[in-house]
Length: 88
Length: 88
Length: 155
Length: 155
Image (cartoon, rainbow over all chains, first blue to last red; front, top):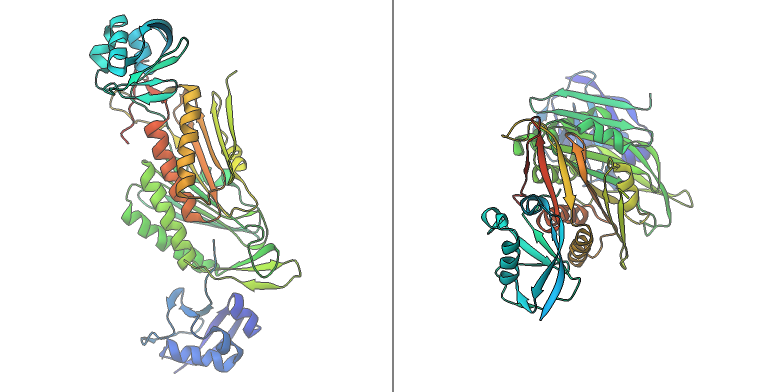
């Protein structure tokens, strides 16, 4: 099953991908690792630098890359790439 | 040996003694308990209420009433009656 | 607009007030936001960029960005946890800068009001720990030579 | 005059600034007093009289008095101890009201600046603990019927 999600890139991930926001076709359900792999296919430069230092946020909830749970995505869902935080 | 110290009363002790400041003849050296007894002789109402709830300050240093050390006082030294603190 | 004000509604015990702003933060505004006739204690924290903070050169300022709706939801969740731990907390307020912040200007002002001082002071420590650990905000240091590097919170 | 300003001179690491005032305290002034280009963290506390604080009736205000020279010496000693424990502390400032303080007005504003947040927050807790335990200041609550009672710090 194919759905179109809205991917948001922040901070270093926006610099590396060259975009802040894009629509992306993904199969659903999908686990976090496969979602990340899909983003890497789109933006290979993300891999080198952020691998191991990034989490995703799906519908405003953090999801670790190695989380095995299958995510059921719907059209328009927000997926965000979250590099290490540095607020405050 | 007789000396004249300046006794300061604060908060409840000022209300009980009816004065905020007075000159007082005391024998020196004198320990804290005898100094307190001298103040009580001057203002008997102090005793009832503050006994067990007061310390003295001699030349800006706190001295417990039951401190046994002999204090050598000089003319003009400040002795303060310090009821329980409530700053802040 | 430049300012995102996110009043999250009142809990039984008090208000949670979050604001992301491209303008100078006002300590007075944050104090006023947590002020309460029934609360004796306001604990407040101001975080400011230090001069000569970096090994990569002289820092002239910071560039902040945030995932704004998730800042709101994460701060709300953080406040729920604080209120569970310290049920007497009255109001909680966080103002955070976005965009360009010069060295010496506050990037965050946070405050908690509480009937008793120790509760508020402890909650404020946890509020800032949680802010740094979980709230999606990022900064990069910008140096005299205009180079920049994204920072990472140690905590 | 009404205001006793007691700048105690600079230690190697920073300033200790104490003020006893018969006028409204200014949070801005305290923030400015501890501001420092090299310090990222300002931890601040505001203590305010609560409404309906007492069992003896509705509190309308407080009357404060102090043993002023000893306030100075005790706060200086307190700051020496804080600086021994947290050597990185920058500036320490305490403004305390004297005389008549209406309910809702701040009676104390205290702040500490430090390079790192946790040091400053911990030092501020101890500063206020020490202030309440050792600094010769007294308050009495004044009630609607003009009766009054001297308070005693629990801590």
